[in-house]
Length: 198
Image (tube, rainbow, N blue to C red):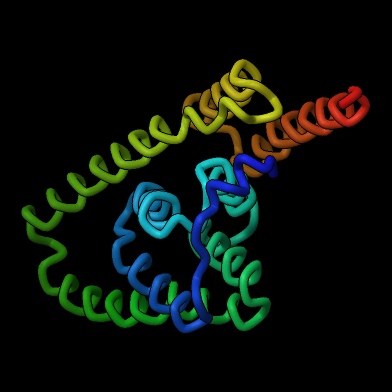
C-alpha cells in the first residue's frame, strides 16, 4: 500500500463492540445488491477503507468460500482486533439478519403466491442489479492506481464478464484462470518495479 493510500485511511473501529454494531447496521441495509451498501458504508461514511483497499479486500472476499460481505467483515475484524474482532464482525453480520429473515419468511409464506408479491420480487432483482453496476462504475477510478494498469484491468474484467454472463462457464474455473493471469501479471510488474532504481 502506498503512503498516499495509507494517508487516506482516516478511521478504524474503536472496539469490537463498535465493530459488532457497525456490521449489524450494515447487514440490515444489505437487501440484494449489497456491494453498493458496503462500499458506501465502509469507504464513504465510516472511512475504514480507501477505495483501493476496498477493491483489494473485496476481490479477496469474492474468491473465498461463503458470502463475500461476511468474508470482508471477517477480514476487517481480524485486521483490527484479531479473533475477537472476527467474532464480533461475524456476529454483527449474522444475528440481526437471521432474526429478521425468520420473521419475513413466516410472513411471506402467507402471501408468496399473490401476483403483487411476485412482481415486487422481480422488481427488487432489477434494482439490485442496477446498484451493483452503479457501484462498479463509481469504483472504476480507483483502478487507475492498480499495478496492472487500466488496460489489463479492462481486459481481465471483460473476459470474466463474457465467460460468466455470456458463455455460462463455471465461476470457479473462470476465477481460477482470469485471477491466475491477473496474479501472475501483477507479480511480474511488482518484481520489475522492485528492481528499478529509486
